[in-house]
Length: 107
Image (cartoon, rainbow, N blue to C red; front, side, top):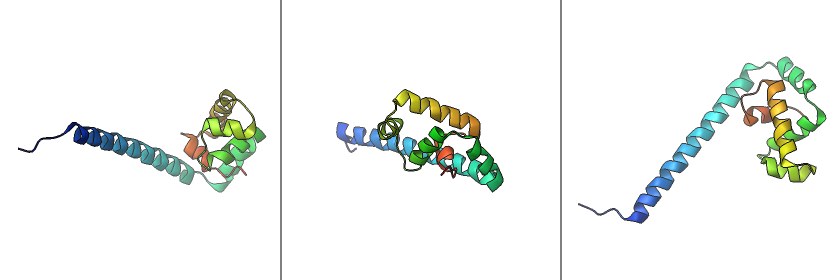
């Protein structure tokens, strides 16, 4: 019977964690894409018009995969402010997550 080393066990655990993370990410993207696909162009336009300029700026950076910290650094705001504005934009848009926000054409 082959012996399993601790390094092999660690590698297996890392593989499981990575698979779980990727699966969760794919699920979030699929949910956001489904929500975006369900909206008509008119619906999206109404949502974008309801957003503040600050929220639109943040969504612009979300499209590039920026974190709250990175967006805060770019815009010269606190990370807390960015988080708050993202939550407000999520509520206004009825978006399920930040990926769904990024799929809006807020430019």
